[in-house]
Length: 206
Ligand code: NAP
Image 1 (cartoon, rainbow, N blue to C red):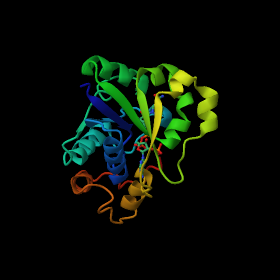
Image 2: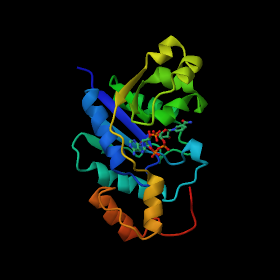
Image 3: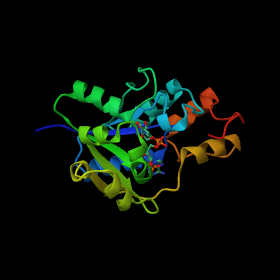
Image 4: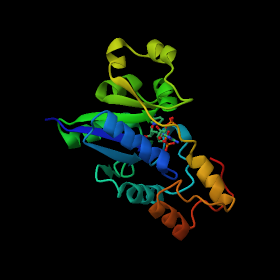
């Protein structure tokens, strides 16, 4: 049987339980064997600006996924120079993982914006896409119909996931304000943020 591998790309600045719950719900619904979390070194859409360093975001992601045996983390985007284009990441993973079926997991907002990514048609043809649709974040059928061919659209499937009003931006704001982030991130991530003194500075609103 071919292995079915989910790829959860993200800035993860920091990773939080919304990311983990989404990945697990998608893994279960789409019968994936595992989910590989891939932190972006230089997210193409965010001008390369992140609050925490790539190394810290990788370390937090590794701690967050360690409690789920079906989850793991990859540093492939961190080892590459230039912007972290997903199309390049999928090509490298395809070469590494042989004939496994690859499913890129993304939120509806990101999917609605996919046509603006680097080489979107080639990307869509190079793997399957699972869109985690949650309340208030639905796929924009009009955009998808307009921008992609039927073959490309056949690579997109939606999975309903719970709506959790959590974002990395709000977590960083809570830390700056000295508020608790307990349970918004796994305990090991909270401890790492404390130890490293991350997100306390007032020099960001990314
Ligand atoms: P992120 O902010 O860290 O989020 C990662 C994923 O988690 C997104 O799909 C996001 O969905 C989802 N998410 C966030 N909060 C959530 C919550 N409370 N509950 C459930 N899901 C939640 O990462 P990102 O900056 O959007 O980047 C996502 C991936 O797209 C990365 O791998 C990035 O490199 C890639 N990307 C590539 C290009 C390119 O190749 N040119 C351009 C843009 C992005 P939502 O979208 O719904 O927030």
